[in-house]
Structure formats: C-alpha cells, structure tokens
Length: 277
Length: 281
Image (cartoon, rainbow over all chains, first blue to last red):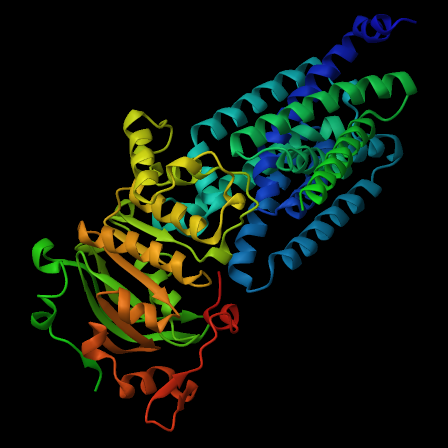
C-alpha cells in the first residue's frame, strides 16, 4: 500500500471523516483553554472536573437525556464549587479538588454499578469513542467550540491580564473573580465536549500536554495558543490514523502522540539550554 | 504621640502645591488576614504628585496597606478615598506593580504585551488595541528606556529591566496613582538609582507614587515623604523632618541595635518570613 493509499483509504468511511473533524475541533478547544490552565497551574482542576462529569453523564444516561447535558451540569457545578469552597473554607485548593474529584467520581461509579450489564458502555465513557460520534453530536460539538472561541476572543485581553497578574488586574478594576469563574466554566465545557473523543481519564492530557509543549517553544502568549492548537490538531489526525492502522483505542493513540511530542520538545529545549549554559 | 508634619511644612517640598488636592485619603482603617490585624487605625493623606515610601518591619502591614488602597483587600473598618471617590470607582486610574517574586517570569509573554495590559481598562471588553494604544505603549517603553527590548520574553530580562516593564505598564495605563510593592528590593544600587529616577520623573509630572520598601536609606534619600508603619502609622512626612531615633525604635522595636557612638543599626531582612506575616490570598 502506498502512503497515499494509507492516508486516503480511511477517508472513504464517513465515520472516520467525522472522527477526524471532531478530534481536530477538540484539539483546538483544548489548546485554547489549556494555555490558560497550564499558565495558571490548574492542570489538577482539569483532571478533577473531567472525573466530576461522570455522575452527570450516568444520571443523564439513566434518564435518557443527552449525556453532554448531564456531564456539563456536573462539570460546571464542580468547577465553580471548587472555586467557591477554596475561597471560603480556608483549606488549600488542592485538598478541596482532591476531595470533590474522588467524591464525584465515586458517585458516578456507584450509580453506574447499579445499571445491569454496564461494562461495555463504561469503557466508552472512560476512554472515549470518537469513531462512534454521530452527526448530531458533531453539530453540537461544532457550535460549542465556536462559542468557546468567540468568548475567548472577546475577553482575550482581560483573561490574559487576570491570568498573568491577578493583583495588577484587580487594582485596574478588572473583575478578576468573575474572570476566574468564567475560565472554570470554559474548562468544564471544553472537558465535556472532549469526552466523546478521549474520555474522562485522558482528557486532562488533551488540555495540558499541547499547551505545555507550546510553552517551551514560544515567547508570546498568542503564539503559545496557536502552537498548542497546531499540536492538538496534528496529534488528533496522526492519532486517528495510528488507531485505524493498528486498531488501537483512538483517544489513547492521540494522547500518546501528544506525549511523544512533549518529550521530544522537552529533550531538545533542555539540551539547547544545557549547551547555552 | 505619632509624629506628623503639617501640610504647611510639606508645601515647599512636594509638588503637591502645584498639582493640588489629595490623591488618597485614608481614615481610621484597620485590615488583616483571618483574625489577625495587620494594620490598625490608619489615618493618612497622600497628596497628588507626592512620592511616598512606606517602610517598616515585616508584618508591619506595608503590603496590606498598599492592597487596601489598590482595592485588592477590603478594610475591616474605616474608609479609603482614591481621587475623591470610594476605592474602585477610579480603578482605571490606579496602577499596581506586584512584588517581583509574585510574577511568573517563565510566562510566555513579551515586554510590549505586558505594557499593553495597562491599556486593558481603557479599551474595555470586546475592544481591540488601536493606534492610540500602541502609541501609549511605545511612549511608556521610551520613558523607562526599554524601547529596544519590546520583543523580549520577560524571563530574559535583568532584575531592573523586569521592574521597569511593570512601571511602563503603569505609564501606558495613564494612571494617576502608581502603587508599587517593593520596587527596589533585591536590585543593585545602580539599578535602584535608575528605577528611582523614573519614579521621581513620574512624580514630577504629577503622578502620585506610593512604594513599599525595606530599604530605609533609599526611602530617606530618594522619596519626598516616608510613612513609618508598624501596624500603625508611627510617622509621616519628609524623611529629614520625621525620621529620628525615637521613630525608628517605635517602628522596628527590638531590631534596632544601639552602637557605642550613640547611633543605631537596623537589622532587617527583606525576605524574612514575608509570606507568613503578610499573607497572600
């Protein structure tokens, strides 16, 4: 089989094309939100919010509602809950995150275990199933990614100022707390729309890894987001082909490629720094 | 009794006489973290165009007072007026420069991007920077002598350059009041001189500059006024009029070591348990 055949053959399948587009959209959304997450040191919140979406998904599944809706409610609620409890409890935020993360996930597992014959679907929720994405899911995914990009575009200056220097932004009159809450909502939405592609367990990698890779390569914030988006899209495409060729779980293949890119960039930049020093 | 110098004494010395009016009026303010008060019953007026250093021991409430003026902390009691209105009303005319150690210098952001942040409140949400904003950024960089470094990532800068970027942000914001947390801590004397020259020039064109500092010599020599703060205001006024042994003893307590010739030495470590005492939200 020639390389062209290798690239073209799967494109004959509608499900593969849909999966490509969906994964690329998810890659862009995760890179945009991930740039803020990485710079604010919020990766752990991303992990917590994705696990916290689980009970929402299970309840929606049991009631026959759209699972994206259930996941969004649980994820946004937990994200804002982490913010509010951290401000009020006097505990460190990582303690609050650890408690809510595990507690919400346990609730999801408990609910799920009450459903007879649950094992097959559980795998899809935990690890994603982008090859099974429907046309309706694609439509809602596209709308949500577009909305996310518009919000970030509109409040770009404010989000950047509040992320880089919350004290300076607060003194200049920016609503730093509301911007923080908005960012938590954007994280939760991104996670929910990414679940179909990579699942609960791996979504944090889609958010963190491309942005962290980009941070090592650039010196401007806008560049970081663009490079992260490029990495996210490339890894999504390469990962899907890898998963098609070797019959691997698609989410895992995407994340493995992102991780490999991260390691390569890390090695190159540390070697370059060692040589400069 | 606290030592204060009447405004009439100040007039010949501070540009407040030409600019006129009060920039900041603080009345009976107390504030703190948890249930520990950092500052109590602070009453203080800062004239427009004044260049004021707030000095005192760790835990003396320097950063707390600055954050209250900036609107970053709510006082437990008392009132603060900034430019004649409650804190927050004129927030766009207030610029805050954080301590260098509170900034993430590995953040992928270039010098001109940081300075452009100063324009954010003026442009407003949804808006994009226009020609006037770019001109303000260029002029601010020029004023702090950083125009040639606009494209650098902030982590590539020296300690003095890093501070000048943030001062340029305040200039670009066209703020009336600059609040700086430890702008000259941890820099060499030449750099300190450069920073002070910039702040002096800003005060000379009517900006009100308030800085916390551990450097008593710098406070006394380079600022128009000093505020000695140890939970309460011990003294406020031009250094040569208000600073004496009694004031220093009241401000620093046991950290003053008497010398045989009648002088004193101040033992003050700028990094000593800073976070634990002043707290960070």
